[in-house]
Length: 357
Ligand code: MN
Image (cartoon, rainbow, N blue to C red; front, side, top):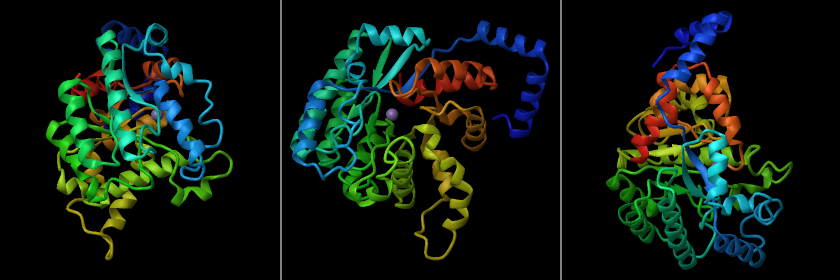
């Protein structure tokens, strides 16, 4: 890892020297051998959207936020359905070689267990078929229904062993429950034993924490997603999940949902009396068991900061398409003042290794 002083020095040299800067750009273009792999890219299928509409109209109070527009009536819905030529041409325009696909939040996690299981099987089969149509352009993360943890573990095995999917994505809380509850740990057992990552993806906060987020459309990307998903990730750490599953890999989008910024404070507070004892410091779990992605956070200072906190082997490129622009994302990272080696890892090598691509 390039340390922070070296990074600032390099940036100053590059910014103040037009010759060096242009040499650097030519250099990047000539030797870049990596593919641009984007790892948080969204799709859905009509059966899920129909079930979502039914659920929300029959249970208007169960999942606050989901019944409010613009969630269900989305202009992007046809973009989410497309796993064919139009999506590929959008990827080509943005120089994206491969998308790691996952189901639109909240996945199947709002439904009753049997319906959720059936839909997860349908979605995973659909995804495997889309990948088989474009094997060099798509990979995918399995959908599971944590509502029945034992069945969810079995679906992980089927998705990895039979459908050759590349990991699992869980849309954070399931009906207000979090995965630090040991009743869900068959899911972690399956993921750890198959050596596949779990992408912990945000969604609207549950009923128990919704009210303060209900104004200003704060319940989603503005603040609510990161607040809820970071809470979930910290619960996994403090709940001893990684003491039980030391090789479990969790991926967080949006540059770690704010957690890298808080690690030093969490470490100092974790030593205080009364705080649940876990084997290591929170930051040690974060640096050993977590990976973060650039989804919808195309910012140089945040990239610099995260490189210094978690290192270049723990960051992967993601767009969060179609909710963020693929072209903005690659334009940003292509031009970022980081080394070619770091770009190679973030765009390509880390994803190949973690998702076994
Ligand atoms: Mn997303």
